[in-house]
Every structure is written in structure tokens, then in C-alpha cells.
Length: 95
Image 1 (cartoon, rainbow, N blue to C red):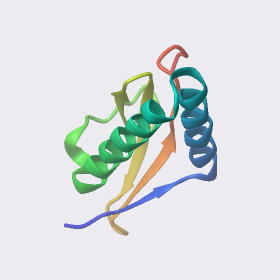
Image 2: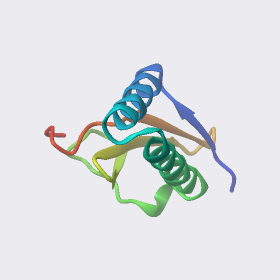
Image 3: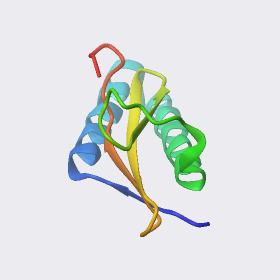
């Protein structure tokens, strides 16, 4: 069963901000490593969206997984075979 991954516009903006922050804080090389690892984690989610447990504290049908300093929050649409990344909150903010 093949899924397609989608990101909300807000998540795209959060990712751009996180990568820019990483570049400013730790340099371009580390920002590229961070981006590559984050994209690979999201690809892993899309390949197997049931890998991580539902998190009812976040809302109906939402799952999350920690990736370094952030969580990746996502939902699945089984009928359309879509994984929608809906949030990328910092681990330092309450989910």
C-alpha cells in the first residue's frame, strides 16, 4: 500500500524557518544534514504511516514522532492513501 505525503503551508513555513535557524546557528553544512535527516524521517513516515502510535492528546487521528528538537505531527487518510504532515512543533513547547 503506497501513500503520498503532503505538507500544509504552515508546515512548509515552519520547515523553512527551522532550516534557516539551523544554518544561522550551526552553519550551512549542519543545516543540510538536519534537512536531509528530517526529510528521510518524513519519507519513513509516508512509507509506513502506522509505525507511530495515535496520540489522542493531539486530536482525533493524529500521530507524532520526535525528530531532534521537534515533533512531526501527522494524520492519514486511508481512503485516499495520503499522509498529511500538519505540524512541526518544537519539543520545548507543549503539544
